Length: 211
Image (cartoon, rainbow, N blue to C red; front, side, top):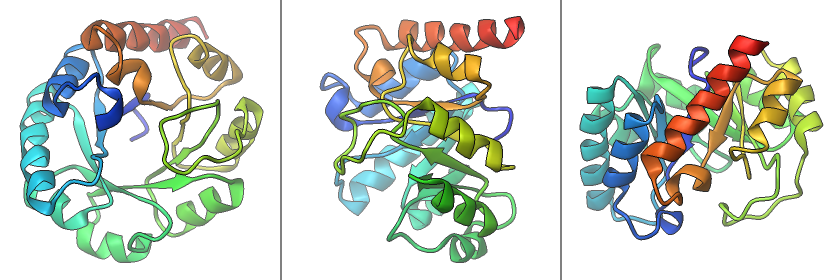
């Protein structure tokens, strides 16, 4: 995960009624190399069907596919990993099921939570919300980029800044020295998903080359 700079998290409610397969196909065509599939209350059968379709799309593009919550479905569709949060199966137990090569991520909202996830064996964490966002069903106080930076500096695993990250404010994160970001609606809700993904990847690349 260290080489992955940008993660796209899907959002059924913020995709302009486009199928997730269409959104992801366009996003990976634009350069996204890690997709977290986060569907909104699907049936098990629907989740598996969509996950298998996304696995084909991401594999063809050489991109990682991470599934939200469901280790069983991740195993069935041979996804690269699973993303967990509070209330999900503990990270150490997930490692037993995912094996040494499976990627395990965790949703952290404080430095303490991020440290705990790292100690338990997470491969990466998302840290949110860094900026104001509506892409969550559980609103939390905004941490701000400096708290995110402090957390990032305390970890030895990648920390993806999440929450309201877009084409404008991602430069602020990169300039502070953060190397990883996760985005939702700035790609999923864009009129042209591929163009939005390509321009965001270009911003990250240009900032990296200039630093």
